[in-house]
Image (cartoon, rainbow, N blue to C red):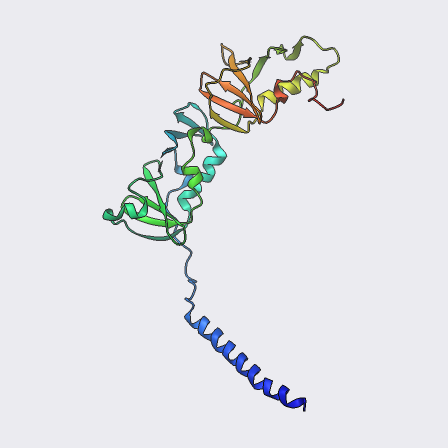
Length: 290
């Protein structure tokens, strides 16, 4: 009596398995075959090492110009300061990013591709790359070069839309800069014939501690660079450099999340993560060693 129901179920199971196999076969047959040919063409044939000048225009601030100087980069407009070379090296990868698709640009359809009001224009030497909108389904980016339209993966907009300040070097002082004196409202550290001295003097400090403080200033990397705020500083730090007749004046603005060193002459502010630079040599941060 118990064998008959089990025997009736077996044909149903077989039928279900047959239908499953047919459906899988139909799915494989209808699925487009993935391309297995040569890899995608790069966006351009430009050699990143041959790029000497980059100009960036977008709606987030004034245009800015980056100029190669040997192995490093320098911003020449609107600030004349060392540039963020590692970030520029990443930006140069745009030149060889794979193109998913390309076709002649239909001049009457600029609005459709977001090119009537482009997000940004980047010029590498004489080659201009214009950033349009994104594809409505796959969200890839439309880029224009001359009269041709390209579709690429959207991995560079944060560079194209950056402000000038975001491409400035995070080094507080350029490589090779030699500091001779640091003066704050509370202490003064100066170099006299190769030896570092502190005022007011602290006999408990070793010479190495004074040298380490000077080195910390000389090789400081800031968290970010921004346009100088109009807020006046709480204090002023004077830094005398070996190759400059006049000292560099930095206003100190303390905020909740950071401390700013403001260079009014450049119109820039350098953000520090802590007040460690401003503390006297040998002075521990609050709460440490107590």
